[in-house]
Image (cartoon, rainbow, N blue to C red; front, side):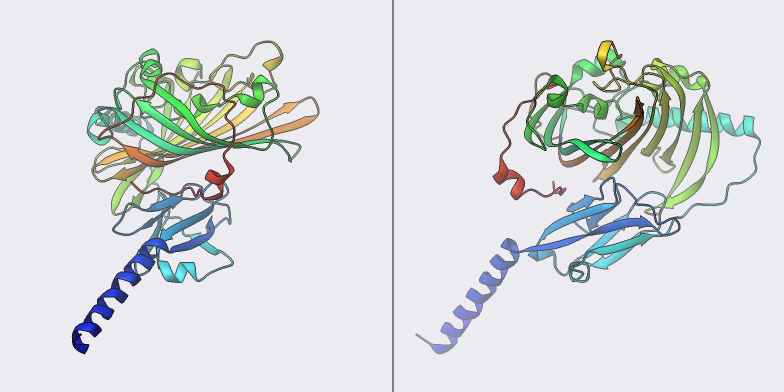
Length: 393
């Protein structure tokens, strides 16, 4: 065989092998995201590969771990979260930090101007109304699936009591619209596909899924929150500032419920409710909502169920943060964190939940029937040994 031809074949074969190696190799990046001014962790910071849909969100403690295909080695990784200046780094540089990449994001917010409170309140009401009117344009208006990672942890006096991880598939038969609570309940279904827990179920509480608490924290899809136009007069609105996020101007509106109730907050026995909602002024999409709740009664069955009998606890304080992210021309539910504390006699009980969407399917969604309130799924160690919370659609 001609030596030049043989050399060319060998070069081509080497290129193919290199391409295959890049496809099969993985680049591991891990670390934590914190607020540069306070040192506090930043949950749900987006770590995405620029020019792709690949990425991950930091968890409740600001921690993250990302496994990327070797082909992404020369690309750039961007860290972004509403309220902070973005940060870029090459994938290879981030991966080189074997001990973990520590990212301190700088908070960014405009100065708050002194304005007429009553006049400005009307402006904010109009913004909230426009956010609702643009839901069909900004979010999926037809059936869709979310597939995501769910985790909850319960501790007593700072000692771990119970923990569970799950892969959940959610199906919405109508898409985002401001239907009433009953209609939304009938249109939203979910199932648990994989589960890993620290102990086998021994009681009803051990097998509860608690995913309804996540569903109702999706403030764009559900009513009984700041976006409920029927109850907007029950909210006191204030200016929390304006900031830039990915080149767009974002208004932060603070709110406080005058007379909190189940219909305005989605929680039974609520005594206090306040929060902040972030609205993109370019398209009036909701980017984030943080709600702080105090309630006299909390049910160990979840915040959506009215407590009875032995399931009642003492007063509870709760914070729920909901994040949305843009995928091409539509926004989707990126993630939710829910944390709470309550007293049980002389003991202090605390709990955390987090949900992260890892796949979105609005083209040919799989129909799911019913809701899985209780699970006794047998864990699959092989699945969890190879699983990383990672978004790639």
